[in-house]
Length: 565
Ligand code: ATP
Ligand code: MG
Image (cartoon, rainbow, N blue to C red; front, side, top):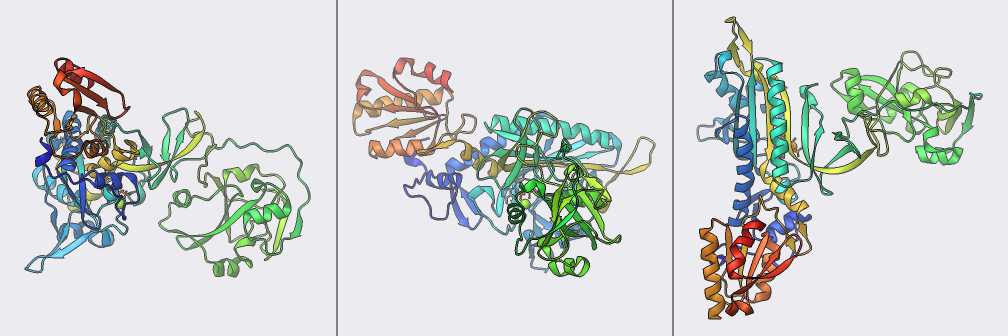
């Protein structure tokens, strides 16, 4: 492609609204333009990269026998009402009425549409398992659209749905999909981890998120420094490898701790490390008040609490509620001496506590030399805390570290929720009707593109991994007015095209400096510069990623370029 004929508007200035590198660079290098908040146009270069991501996704989907199709963005409200999501999805679902005042939504996801379609078309176990996918534009009225393509209100997603006659069959497809996702993100050149995720309100089924490691990620993941283990921090279990100190139990005492509110203030005042204090919180678990105790240096994870009680709603009690039941405010709560009707549960680490401190359930007073079981009863010890950096990895190998991640993909065992709601059943080999079992699998295609830029850039611009680069070669003619430069560049352009190499030819009448800086900004992996030595047939070849450059004669060029790309 000739750059002189292309819409490729580069900018020197960093756009004021762009906080992160991928957003800044994709705008500056002329890949995208914002049309409305969270709504983008892909300019020609952006569209080329998008297509490359899509092609990798297609190839890996096809390999596992998934069929590509295309569903509508415009979805009738009735379908969403059948699953209850018309009410439950919230304001993220964009809704509108047609001219006959019928209600519609713009597809935020397609479980409803696909399940109702498969319900009508698939009636027999002989057709199962079946996996369908599409690459399509999704609409979500995100509360905070930001970071360019990372969180848009209109974005490109690959969504796949699998249908099964049994959970075993779902397990098999899930494994294949997991492998396909790993292949996709590896081929995109990404440094990523598949992490164990929270299955949320659908309850208890397998789900993994594919996270690209990046400082700008919105999620925190816990991973082992030596093994493959990685999980969303909410999900990672803390292993019970605590040890009890040898010291013998001392006598319980009350100590005045005036105005000492936080765990740290109390620990400093009592001159002991943070972990020698117990932290006590009062939670309301499906309306019931429960005292939850953990070590002072730990944090309670309410998802674990929710799982322990198999509860729907877990929330902190208000200060008034604690005062009404226990007689003290937040800073002075403790498990000692509470009445029988208040349940006390504790994190596993509390079991090992010896001579620790805790609130006395009187404002401004603490107890010291507290020992569990002797001084208070715990109904259940369980893993209730967040994992921390430095903890033993749950798989027993290595130590936990934290990293930030961008979620680019999500694989999820749905079970029969949608199939039941929409009546998707089939006749099994006994001729009996049975509800289908489903899986769903998403990839943020446009988000992936931005995640790649987060990992592939330097101070001069983007540096695309070769699989995703908009072109493989950037050919620069420094001075198109010089006949020998022009004719050599034109002939190299021809030869590259004939060899099937994707080449962007900067044939513009611009200064050399502009061409070089635009080229660095755009980030095509190999650059050929036709300059002063054109008369001798000599050009310069430079690799964007490592800056390596060499002079080559035009006769050796094609072979060298082929080796590079
Ligand atoms: P997030 O937690 O980031 O909002 P999600 O859990 O809502 O993501 P899914 O419903 O699982 O996402 O959608 C599948 C994939 O679509 C996600 O893994 C992500 O890569 C992508 N995605 C989701 N929301 C957006 C968005 N607003 N902009 C761009 N990509 C998105
Ligand atoms: Mg979301």
